[in-house]
Image 1 (cartoon, one colour):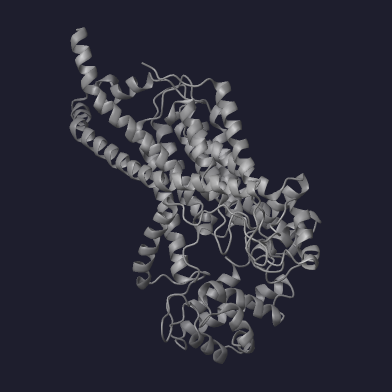
Image 2: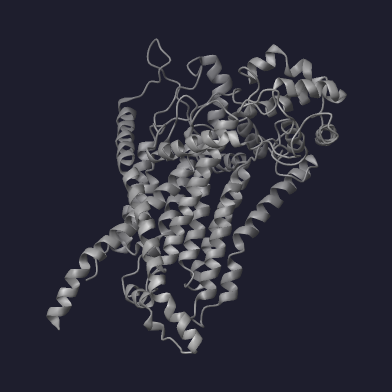
Length: 616
């Protein structure tokens, strides 16, 4: 008996209604602005976007210009040119990513109503409207407003193509293109955008194996295999294009002069020097800096700046933490004239790296192995704290902490002079409004009754996710283990048939193997949206997709955990973890559905056996 599905027209209407409902709720939110502050974050991206719209690429060269991957500035400039409000643009991109995520799993879902439900789960994710206090998140004019959506697009593109490896190429070629665009944009959006690359590589290899194993003669294997190169081609094109623009304007064929190149060489050389007293969050402590002042004449002038009360009060707590020192170092270099031109900065840091490494290599400074990185060296002492923080981060994401949707009051926005001079120009550029109203005689943000109602609705949605997501994740893990045990058991029971047949040179009929029989029976089921009249993907492939999602989630959680433990002192922060939430929801939904189908199949098997016996 086939389960009834919703008509395609109703599927479209319901999807549009879901989008409209959330956009109406999001109309209660206001952008969080603090012009002149966050000079390395919001202000940097905004200024770069303004420069792009004026035809000056990222603006005049300085120590901040090429410091960060700045695709978000291009995104802002595009929204401004198109006249799309900033917050609306971010939500529309999230809707596109949610649609891609739901449609990518359509071959597994096999029902339109399930695809619609998954779209709703992704679309209404509390992380997509989160505004974590006191730092803010999706309402800030910063790159993490779009980074999770870009990651979801990349992952969905690889999953969508892998699950459709049997389909005609003209129907599935869009998926590797979506994956490549998402990968390139994410790579150019954040310095750690590379974290998606392992998933893309493994997914491409898995898809290639299934393509080559397919026995249908009509399947154009070479063309489908070549299609798997598209994500990498688009990534390379994005990197080359961005580097080319930087070369045209600054003479540097690089994406960033911070995370790679000579600055990373110099900073990495500093972090290889042994510490008198190791501190997990301080990669270049005071005693190391003192040795550099004494042994490198060109670095000696930095002492008056870096050890000044002014710099220490701005960048340090007790000493410079790893996540702050490299910015203090760059700004000090600018004060000393080393950032007057791109070439001057390149030459200075190249020479500094060479001088430090020479002192380390000849034994003048006690040091470890040479390195080039802006991350601290990995030490065994980090392992325990990183594991603890990583596990907590997974729970933190599963329970949607720091996902309050309420807007924050933009500082000094109720000062008419400050508002007119600082905030109003930014609002005009963004086509959006800041929250400038406060409760009387306080700095608490003022919300209208309608805004209060909409935020209460978001609160209710967040509580539903907080309760159901951990349960769904537990079910998904059970499904993952159950399928693995079943398949291992099946291989042990039936694998010897192929080996014995091969020795005797006896052809084994394709229908003889129980797994093939099960796949043929399963193929008779109704196919979902975008997958009509095609066999559903093999159970083994679906299981590998789940494993890949789980691996991606864990990798991101522990990457951020290492940064939290080694570099910053702001604690667990949803903005850095937000790319986990959509992947976690995809995994939880797919795994829960898989477990439900296994349970119903197992529980329904005795009944079917009795019915067949009675019919006989």
